[in-house]
Image 1 (tube, one colour):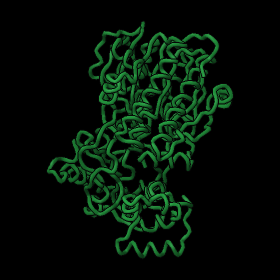
Image 2 (spheres, rainbow, N blue to C red):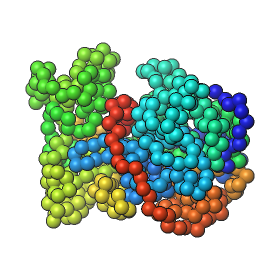
Image 3 (cartoon, helix red, strand yellow):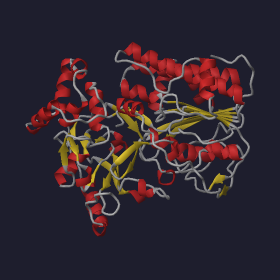
Image 4 (tube, helix red, strand yellow):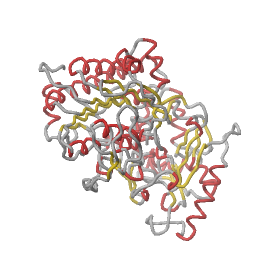
Length: 541
């Protein structure tokens, strides 16, 4: 829906393309799929935008909108851990000031739509509808604004409704993208903000759900371009900045099952039955077999039978693979309860293990440290030597082709810094060129062909066009940390001294200044099965 009322456009419009990158965009430009984006890239300044570690949505967007590394803002992954317990991250985990709150303190209003990890929102001058990791129909700012948007614009969903068939998926993507644009334009008209931030998540999701599907990719980006064109036509923002949190591309190398490596090394202890890993035996396996009774665990005859079968190597991983090849996964899965799935799944026994990969998308290894974890297995006095030996062993890992598995393996303090460093994995691993991938599951062999044929890359994209931006400026060396400082400088505000980047030469730089200590809201639980399932569907859990 387009507003019938004229409105002043924002001074700065930021458009977020999750996983946007030149290898994806350039063929779309050449095919004429995205004329509006193409025009912005052609008339303005554009180039690659280097992401952070890890280059994954849940951590990278908070880095972008705070300008601070995860050691300062505190979000490393889709999951946050407390001992062996876990929860899906939300905005209460972000311990640094979002740019729209900084702008609000300086008298500038904002409209923010669909930016990940922004639920629940804090008070600021403007409006916010959160994005990924929020539940459907989340609390928004101001209270009641989502209901107002739905009444004015029609249905609004955070997560696309799609099906296994291409037509259903594409239609679901397009409806979701259209609703983003409708809601954003409604709020621009209502609030008349100085700053607008609209993010599109489906530009990433399509590669996880329909990898290599040219028709789906073109449909998604074509729909995004149409919403961007409608927004520019109606509100004529003076300046537009296009950014992405990371890139995406084929995984041409190997999948490394890091917990299998740690098991062979004597670090990982395994078990069968029970919860084990967070959603890997619960939602991930359930997603493949569409099992019922998700999250419940009541031993049954089926479960006991599957436990017995597992002792002889008959696991649900192998069953699922066979069913997929035969096209029977859906039919059989509807009759397989999750207890059966969990019982036959070999899992990491976190309390009994010395080290483990808890979540593949944090790209790290956590050490089960005495005095820090509830059942720590590594004595504090041995921590540094143990970690150093583990780093050396990981650095020495070679793929079956004889090539290094990792381009870097480092202690966490070599990658992150800040007051939230203690929440980071103890060791950070960087797959070589991100053409290799790590996987936390257990399935016997340490190496296999990648489970996901497409995955994240370190390099995203940035483009800038507008009357107040230097469209001739070189963006060489731009990083995700530079976006928030650039927004500060654009609005002639001091750059927060805690920010890790610099203002890009698109604008005149501002001086750096220490801001008052940020007071985030108390940490609250996400605890939403729908969010967990969506993250599982995308392969993040």
